[in-house]
Length: 111
Length: 114
Image 1 (cartoon, chains in turn cyan, green):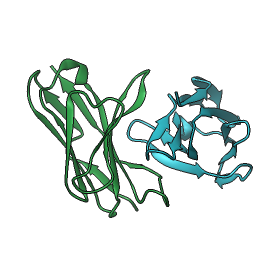
Image 2: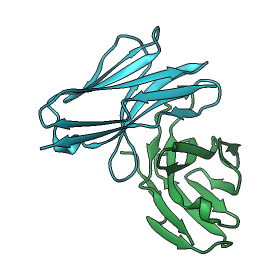
Image 3: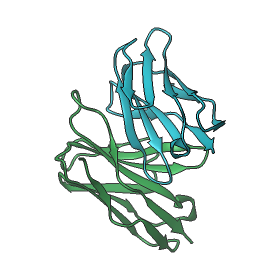
């Protein structure tokens, strides 16, 4: 059965810390991997990754995919309280248009 | 910017009522999705649609139906609401399969069934 596993489930850090969130997957027909941020509302899109080793970057956030080892990481440097959210990882299944979702990592950034 | 709107942010219904949740997107997206989100269970796909009048079952379709009469509008119907359908319902859309699969979400509807 296809699955996406995120770790850790939750994380508490202080402002200014750097965090690394992990997403591993077992999906038979991998097409792409997506990262979303969810605060107290709907998920908002961060990155889509399709190729190994190519870093995607947006401000203090960056992400990379390893298709050989079947995982992705999301890095957040110099964390701020506004980064507090649930970070969701999803893999697009090339067979059926669906996204397979992880359960998310809950990040709390304390001042 | 992609805009996905949902008809209600909060809804309270009684057991046995028929419930309609509406979703509209303004970016001419082909694909539309309905999810529910529950603590500890994550996002679960109820139904999706890749064209007008087309629908596909997701992972948990039981107790739900959908309608897509126009490209921009995708409705979720709870035929007879039950307390275990209390949840956050999220609608999403994506542009075109094979070219852009990123899903964009509406603000969500929190449904409470009493």
